[in-house]
Structures are given as structure tokens and as C-alpha cells.
Amino acid sequence: MLVAGYALPASAQVFSANHNITSSITPETPAPNEEVSIRIQSFNTDLGSAFITWSVNGVEKLSGTGKTVFTFTTGNNGSLNVVRMYARTKEGETVTRDYRIAPGIVSLFWEAETYTPPLYRGKAQFTTDASLRVIALPTIIENGVEVSPANLFYAWMINGEEKPLLSGYGKESIVIPAKDTAKRSVVISVKVTSRSGGEAETSTTIEPVRPEILLYEKDPLLGILFNRAITGDFLLSQNEVHFEAFPFFFSSYSNQDPRITYQWRMNNKMIENEEGSHAITLRNENQEGTAYISLQASHQENLFQTAQKTVLINFKN
Image (cartoon, rainbow, N blue to C red; front, side, top):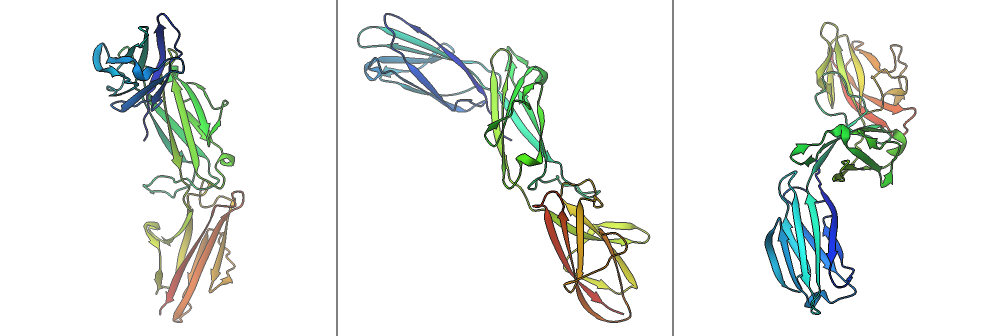
């Protein structure tokens, strides 16, 4: 979760001369209770010899000759920090500038539109070529009242590219299509603006994980034993065993999605499977020994979504 706030445009009053003072605020969008620095400079007058005073909400915080940098800490979320800079040049002229900084918060949450099996308690992870759903949760307080998310403007960016069709008032959630997530991590940024000019912004980077394929035993009475994935070795002492494959984090709606193909092999030889590509039945034909069962799952449309699994079957009478 990332947070950010906003700095309202500075207002300036210049007496006797126009000194063209420019300002920079770091960070540009301060968060609540964050250290902020304001730096001023001018190409028309020597601010290094000017007597400069800084105040926050009417309370003087810093003064002295050449004090062109002022650092302070913002207040809580929704607080208004009015910073005033007053400068008297060596020519006797005065310049003032006000900065209104009101920190706000916006958090980003995401979920991938990828498949996880029933009873899986984890999060659907993002894999290359998968679609993403992203939700912004802003908290912008003005005049002591939290602004409704529906009354805020959301400007979205994906990998540094503005997305005007996804942006607008009340558009706190977006779906990022697979074409924007191919072959790389995804950088998502959002800038949230109120009608009165307040704003908060944040960004996050989502790194893809590799898809997985797991095998589960299907018991004739209990059904699929999701509490125990088949890994490593498996002892086959009964007449037969039924395995079903479940892809994790593929762009699919189930393990029987026709876009996913399964290739089963025994000791590196293809297995003809009459029960459907996602399942296989192995029979113990009254002989002892071992065999490697391998499976490769591939998405026909998203070529980067592929996974493999190998288990060692120990046949025992």
C-alpha cells in the first residue's frame, strides 16, 4: 500500500519589483506526517543575501539570511498546512509567497483474473498475459469532511502511458487487459483529484509469477483431496488411482477450460488418456516397479502461461 498527498498551487505577492521567484516542493505530493522541503530561487535577485522568514499556520519556524530551503513535517490526513515565505532583499524590497499543503491518502489494491482451485485460501496471483483488476481507495478530507470517492476524478497510467478511456469521475477501479501485461511487470499509477483542486497520487509495481500445475488424488468416496497435493513420490498399492490436474494462475475459469491443453507422459512417452485431458487413471497390474508421470499444461492463447509437474509412482502389490 502506498500513500500520497497533495500540494495546492502557491500564491504570491510581490512588492516594489518582480523577482520571478520559482519554487520546488519535495516530494511533490506529500503524505500525512511526512517531511517536506520547499526550495526557492530567483534569477533576478540575490536571495542568498535576502533576509527570509518561514512560518507554518502563522507560527514562525525559521528565519535568517539566505534561508532559501525550508523543511517541515506535514500534519495528519486532511490537515491544512499553510506555509508562508517572507523575504526582504538587500535593496529593501519584499516578496511573500504562500503554499497550501493538505496531505491525503490513496491506496491501490489489485487482483489478477487468474484461476485458483476450490477451497484455495490464497490470492489469485498475476502471471504474464493475465488481466488485472485494480482498485483505488482514496481518503481526501476537505473542511473536515471526507470527499466521496464518487466525486473524485481518477487519472490512470499503465507503464507510464496515460489511459484517458479508463479515467474519469468515480472510476476508482479499472481492468487492465492482457495486452498491457505481456512479458513484463506492470507499473500502475493513479492521480485522484477533487473538484476543488485537492489531489493524491500513488503507484505500484506488480511483478508476474510463474503459473503452476498441481495434481490431486480423487477418492471414490471423498472426492478430490484438495488438502493433499501430489508431490515427489506416490505409493500405488491399490488397484488404481485417479489424478486430476489443477492449473494455478492461468487465465482460465476452471481446470477444464478448453483453452488449456494437457500432455501426459510416462517415462517420457505420451499417454493416451480417454477420460479427458485434465485427468488420468493409473492402474496397478500386479507388478512392482517405478514410473515417472509428467504433465505439461499450456494455455493456447497466452503462450507464456505454461507449467510442468513430475511425480514418481511406486507400484507395489
